Image 1 (cartoon, helix red, strand yellow):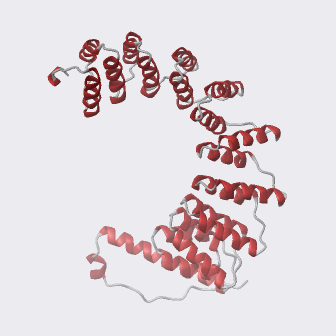
Image 2 (image 1 turned 180 degrees about the horizontal axis):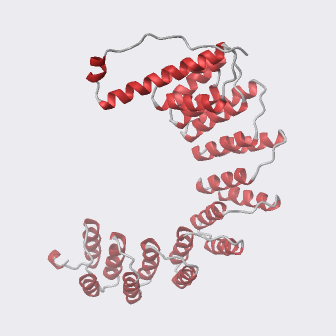
Image 3 (image 1 turned 180 degrees about the vertical axis):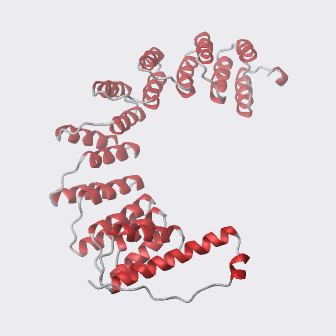
Length: 379
């Protein structure tokens, strides 16, 4: 391998010209010159058939992209043929149109992108909700007889589920199975979570059975999705049973999961069970927030247990949980509905609760129903 010398340059700007630039401008000019020299060096290494360090190429490509120089990066790409790094950089910068143009340019020049490049572009499209374009790119990959791996299929399945295309997602899972790829924990969990969120609890439970059959342990995402679906369908006993199963598996439900089940029991009129779950939640190290307390307070007020509701408010405040507008309106509606408006006024004054517009509307509605007249100034 022969040695070579960099071409001489006679560029020497006058001192007055340099002085005219500010410190920031000098720094920018220096950065540009360094980038220019690096680019020249890479071209010379290619001309003399020298080895080009991949990391160096990738670093320079990413630097160009961050400097918003797609045309320079594209020219550089055509010199060193490192499309994957550039497409990856464009996708990370959410410049999917530029990434797609580069991909198409690559195909037009007769260059066949590898599986990593396809996966990178498909992942970028899916993350930005452009599932239709991701599917088109996948079809191109199939046409070019490139084998999709589990990572690519999972990327597509996740994109389809987030976009609400569950039928297409299931077809893909069937297709990957035919190609000899077994769905993994991510595949099943994605389908389970998506189907439950879409309201297809039956499919979610089917995925749960499949996971158990394959010996795959459900995680927090999977259990929470099923519990949410069961609560939405009013199957609270099953939801509580699934919560117990989750705990036996050594997983810790979050506040939202506990609160969903509490809310389900309270709506069914079983406030006692709601408080039982609250105690379990606290003994497990959780500090319930205002949403959890609002759920229990609403359950008490619906049953006319206003003294217990006021006591719960006291407990909230003692624990440092600040009531919100919803707390106020729940108490107001409960006291109005059960004819104990004076008690609410006392609690309001003692606790320093502040009325909002929604509270006044709620108050007027309840007073109208009771055919009572009261001065607004009292509230």
